[in-house]
Structures are given as structure tokens and as C-alpha cells.
Length: 107
Length: 107
Image 1 (cartoon, one colour):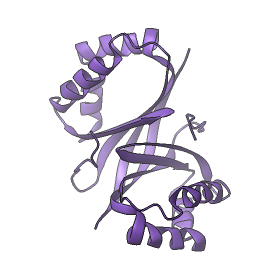
Image 2 (spheres, chains in turn blue, green):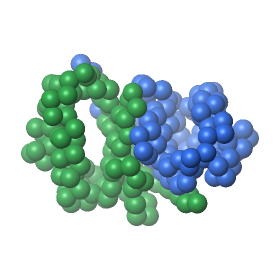
Image 3 (tube, chains in turn green, red):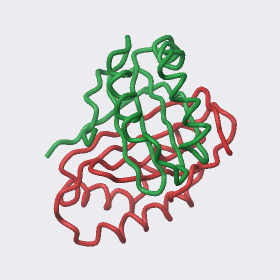
Image 4 (spheres, chains in turn red, purple):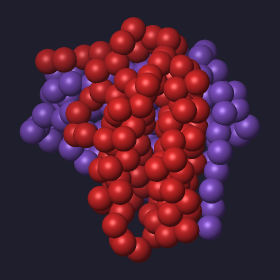
């Protein structure tokens, strides 16, 4: 995921997920990888970007709000969300956004 | 910036800036810190979140599009933007978004 997501012309949607982790590991990395694979196969998925440095920021991109809702309700994702609250995250914030404009630079 | 930004009730705006750095340092860290301080004093600034791990993701939050435009045109920021293209970034993408909903979790 160390790449800039190749998204289409706006408008499309973004989910900004910002988090602070607990000390607990307990399968976190495996679950994170599994969730990226699972999200990538959801209808309406456009791309994902992720970095952690103190705070973790994961931005996933979607064609529309229905696709975001479909991903939120995915049964394996629901289990991961619960484990996240129980074990992995001290704190998080999810923001649902409409991307209205974008601008790219490539050297 | 290792914190989740405390933003007001939506709607508000987000600028997602995703980047890949060059190898060149040449004052990058100092400029990055200076730009966060400068942005924080701009009208309409609401908060900022940032992490780099291969890819860098910085999300800044703003009350409205005029505030984002004001920041984009800030004279010191214009100089930093030019140095970014000349020296610091191999690639970047800026996405301007309207935050429509959010959801918080705190243990």
C-alpha cells in the first residue's frame, strides 16, 4: 500500500480512518492485510492508501455511498471492526467524504 | 501531529495530500513543521493529521473551500509548494473533499 491510489476523475468518495493503536498485537497485521484484500474485492472499491507513524491514517476510495455502506456491513469486516474496538484501537475516527476535486504531480 | 484531529460536527472540508518523497532532504523537516504552524494560523483551519510510512498522508481540515483556497495562495506556502515540486516530491496527489459524516471511538 506504499503507493498513491490511482482514482478516476471526481466526484467519488473517500473514507478517512484515523487511529491510535493499543499495545496489543494478537493478529493485527494479518487482519489488516486480510481487510485490504477483502475491501479490494468489494463492489465500488477504487483504491486505498495507508501509513502509520504515531497516528495511523488509512484512506479508502469508493464510487458511492452505497459501496461504503456495503463494505461497512461485510460480515468478515464486522468481526474485524469488533476486534478493533475490543483489542487493537485506543481511539479512532472515521470520516466519510465526497471528493470534489483532485490534482496530481508526477516528476 | 500524532493525534486525531478534533473537528466539529460535519459538514466541513478535508484536503488529503498523499506523497512519495525524493531522497533529497535539504530542509524538508523544518519546512514541514513551519507549514503546519502556518496552516494552523490560517482562517478556517480546523486541524491536521499526518503519517509517513513509504507513502506520506497528510489530511488537513477546513471550514470551507474559501479557507482552503486562502491557504493554497498563502505566499510562504507558495514557496514551499514550488520547493516541493523541485526537490522533495517524486509524486503527489491532492484531493479536496467535503466531509459529510463522521464517527468517533474512544476507549
